[in-house]
Image (cartoon, rainbow, N blue to C red; front, side, top):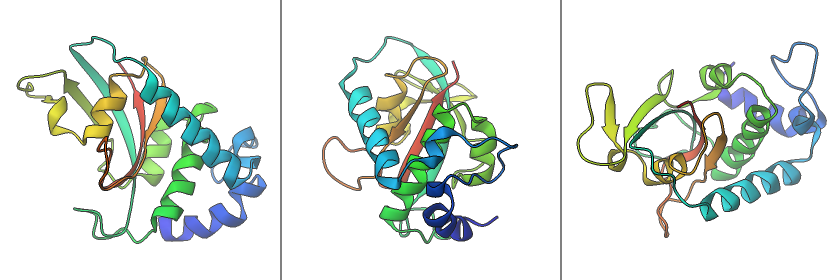
Length: 176
């Protein structure tokens, strides 16, 4: 299903409790109003930003990118920042409720699948990794605050301080 089709479904279906692909059970969060979903996402963003960074030399994450129209490198994306914010809040809630993150990435991400990145704290990367500084700043900042298995969100903010993401919303899960 194309994301252009999903956006109206979010407004009509997901907020009312419908969940595409759910096998007979609907995650509780999808029955919440858009305002509640966004409020919970924003609270999580603030809570994670206040955490100190851990001292890992390297880590692995998987990201689900919800791009914004006009973002660099995302020419096919047509959603507004408001549509992206609601979609990110909905998918964040679904991931936190235990829905398979890889399936969410495969179904919704504007990044190339599987969206798995190994980041190093500094210096050069290896053949399968890259330095944290080569990733969108907000993703690196979030990754070093997440515990293994935890999910967080990098909000869309094209400018501002701290610089977060000019691409859209990143729902990120740390895998190791």
